[in-house]
Length: 133
Image (tube, rainbow, N blue to C red; front, side):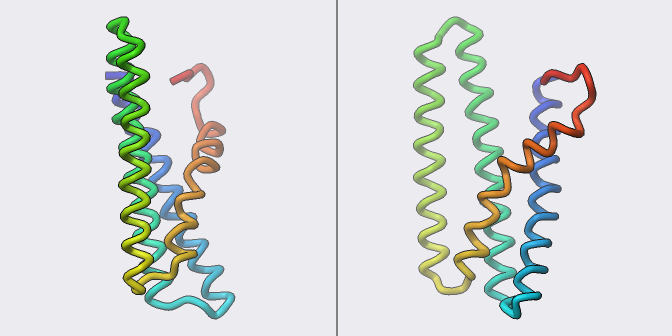
């Protein structure tokens, strides 16, 4: 159960952080005079894709961890590789189709995907001392 709490905490950090970062990104778009419906839609879809990708990563890691704890190291490695490949293919497909639709600002669509890693790093600063999960 502790692992589930850790996953939910990380998802919450990413979700809140993505919302804040997408909001700040849209403020920058507004300051540059480029804020329109396409930028907002791109930011919302990009943020949702980033959060979904992170959630699927967490699921893949949990599955691989379960296999590794049963001494199935090759199975864990295979499951991580398959998970990564499927996530990347799905993400690429959705990004390309969304960008080709012409209904979103492509920069606003892609930028939220870059926010996840810095958000996780910043989230480490708010972790309780002694909390190693």
